[in-house]
Image 1 (cartoon, rainbow, N blue to C red):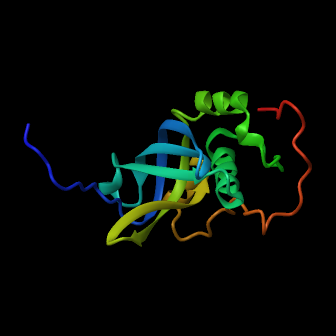
Image 2 (cartoon, rainbow, N blue to C red):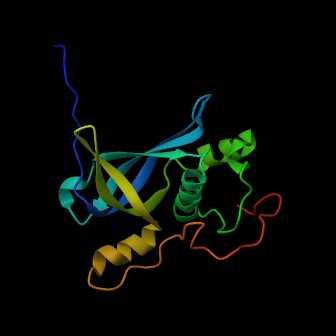
Image 3 (cartoon, rainbow, N blue to C red):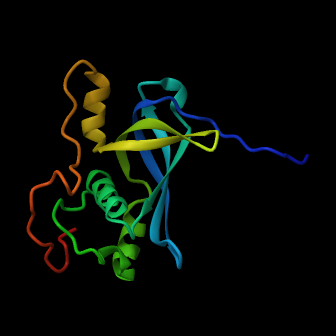
Length: 167
């Protein structure tokens, strides 16, 4: 083995992909708060060279934006009911354990967009779809995309999640 002095990774092309989750980790950082990190592999794509590449998605759960995105990811990947959840929902260790048991192996669709930071380009999943929605998109590219999960600013008020959540 030889020492390596720089790091690089394969950068998937922007576009529509199907992912399979390989790992999820909840991280509780005293400075930044709770976050979830999901690692996924691209299993299908409009760009065949993307297949087999890995993408990580970080959700800062202490911020409404990150928590809302994580809810959207869970709705599309594991079928979490689409409804309103309390702000402290992900702090519950039982909920975290349930998510950790369901996410690995789950499949979902997404659209990769690149962002640049500090002279590096990163792949980010900007939209989430179910696997079936994305398969349809990939096979019928000229048709309109199915509706995305709405952010809290776009979504109409939903009923509060009952105890037990039904998933």
